[in-house]
Amino acid sequence: MSLTRTPRLSFDIVTIFPAYFDALELSLLGKARANGVLSWRVHDLREWTYDRHRTVDDTPYGGGAGMVMKPEPWGEALDAIAAAGVDRPTLIVPTPAGEPFRQATAQELASVGRLVFACGRYEGIDARVAEDAAQRYDVREISLGDYVLNGGEVAVLAMIEAIGRLVPGVIGNADSLVEESHSDDGLLEYPVYTKPATWRGREVPEVLLSGNHAAIAAWRRERSRERTQQRRPDLWAAQQPE
Ligand code: JAH
Image (tube, rainbow, N blue to C red; front, side, top):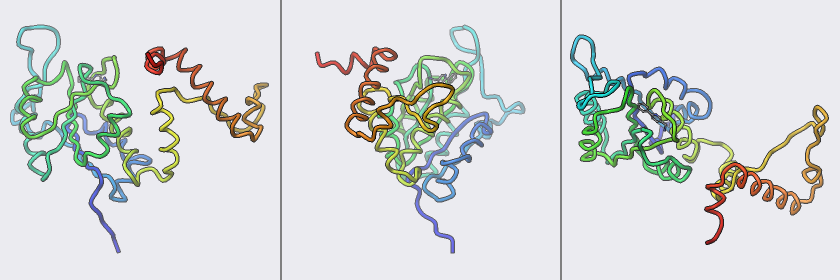
């Protein structure tokens, strides 16, 4: 007998390159979809164009390099997707001009229920689209980091993986999520080792073989602090009271 259930999290993705999202089937998230914990649909933006060339872009008002995504296909696509559900969805638009995406953002979004991702290309989407969508969506323009991609697709894959793995039932081992609350403490992860104890003349730090759990915890904490100071002075500064 086939048991079905209401997914904990559903998402819709709008893109001119649906094939990017074939990769979602792989590994953990694909399994979660088969189990009904997650569900998603990928939509080709060009389905909401009506001209012979299925045009999605045009030249920018005010001049400048590159092209801008036309508002009409986006407006129709986002109306149709919002109307296909009952609750007010959250619309996520990846852009280097957005608010930063953090672990806390992933945690927030993992409990939202219905997410819609709008993948821009070229120089971005006509700004009126996000304004108009705010009537039907909670709109979040989000940046994964201070670099420019050729479009939102790769950023959306990263966000979906970060969000999806936090949904109960997606990761079998709940402990691996708890351990990571370490990364919530604002420090970088300590280095990790496995067998063999000697490899190419390099030894695993002796304390890790000692069985002394307090000493191991102290050693790991010190390595985390050292790494954070060296690699992430911004995180380290936020650690210091006053
Ligand atoms: C580039 C639309 N922060 C990562 C990121 C996210 C989106 C884009 N670039 C970088 C992007 C061109 C068009 C989105």
